[in-house]
Image (cartoon, rainbow, N blue to C red; front, side, top):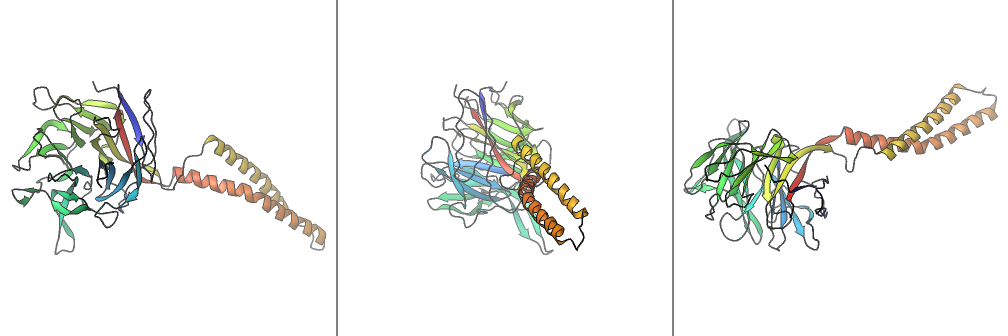
Length: 391
């Protein structure tokens, strides 16, 4: 059975915002919004990685969406994680750089790992190479793994992972990758997620030999490799049929046990992505779920609460009374010779119009808010962090 001592925190990151502290006594659900890089692409899988990008000793958040990447610098001075506003990655010129090929729908999910062993975190992501064709369009070539070397000045230019001195290319379209140390020898292997099947096939690439070994009996979306139970063997998390599933490494080292669903989390397989990171700093890996959900595109738009609905009803009632009298005035037209009656009618109309201004403004504002909350929606990324309790 899955570990039940888990706490779910749905966290949103806005400029300079603080995440709510974990409640020790109970599992609390708090839904906020995540600010994501503006890549000009409204959909696709969102990703996130945690690591000290600028070398100041505080972990930062790197975000990816449809090939564009940016970061929120970690801030000091608070017990919970705080992040600055979204900004270009160090060494990059704009919010969409470093950029992997945007035409690859699944590219751009960031990973922070020291690929070359120089002590600096590098940025790694799945990518797709494009070549200009004489026919006037770009031809998508076999998928690959891109990385950007980290250093004191930020990230360098895009490079491709090489095997035997040549750029490695997958024979099957990639939906995602994850660098990890499979056997604990200090060298990276790459977990590959193949596109084109449901649930998706998974494999492991050994960059030293170039061999790719498909994982038997384990399929799913957005895979993440981590020693979840602390037994020294790599376990796998995947998404399938809306559930987050844990595949524990078998005790004899041969494959994985039957998947265990985590009832605390559910997500859309096609728009979600998983990552393992130590969010609360207790030395143990937590699980991050990044997904694209539909929410209002109007800043701050929320469904009307009970008090707002009562205000709207009251304003409409006042307007109905005023408009009924205005309608009556329109129907009752005094003789032109009765200038006094015409003056009284005009004065009363002006008075009623002034009285109607306030209720009309209230109705217009609340109707617009309700419309924004219910109609004007667009895909927006959210993060869910699954924290382990400390007991």
